[in-house]
Image 1 (cartoon, rainbow, N blue to C red):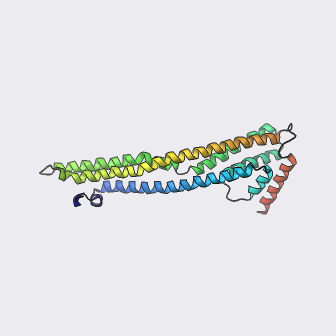
Image 2 (tube, one colour):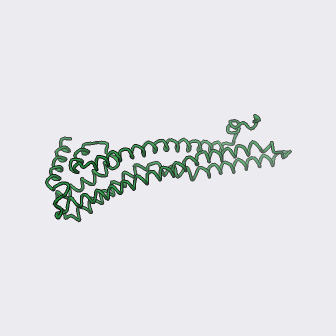
Image 3 (cartoon, rainbow, N blue to C red):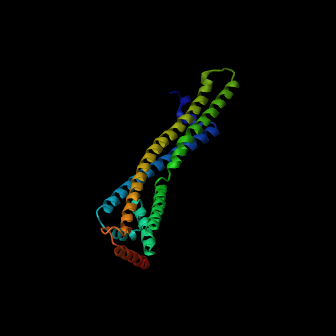
Length: 248
């Protein structure tokens, strides 16, 4: 490649506006890769935690004992936190001797709120990837248009109109386009991947909420003599939980 068309020289000799565009695109690319690594780690960890908790949940252990086991945990997340807020509401309303339908409605509301908050934390950063993927090509295109415009302005002031006289300006303009694509393509691919992965986690958690609601409906049914946990045992779990909170 001739020295006049060296990429580094083209970048350093580009106009100030084009250099600013390139710097912004480079920053956007770095930000997107940081988000990609964080989301990959976060979603992988969340999936492992959910699988471990579901294994524990379906092991046959009593719900009250399961609640006691996670009550003192300061770093509850995912299904563990969703179960905690739902069962806490169940115990609170059961203690007040609310009607069965009111208890289930209250638990469902808490489960939806807990699910929404956990999903919001899980998907933090995905919107930024979408923004980078959609905006970066246009930012690069803006730099390209500006660079080509400068190249043709220089051509109009030149005595001899040759390709060599406009090639550097056009080349620096195309570098801006390439950097825009370099920032946008990984962001778009990562956005699609993480959106699909977080959607599968959401569906799994929503199914868990439905299953937990069904179990609590059986718990509160006075017509079910084979309920998993008697009312007295749930009240004891509530008392134990209150004692632990007081000690803390």
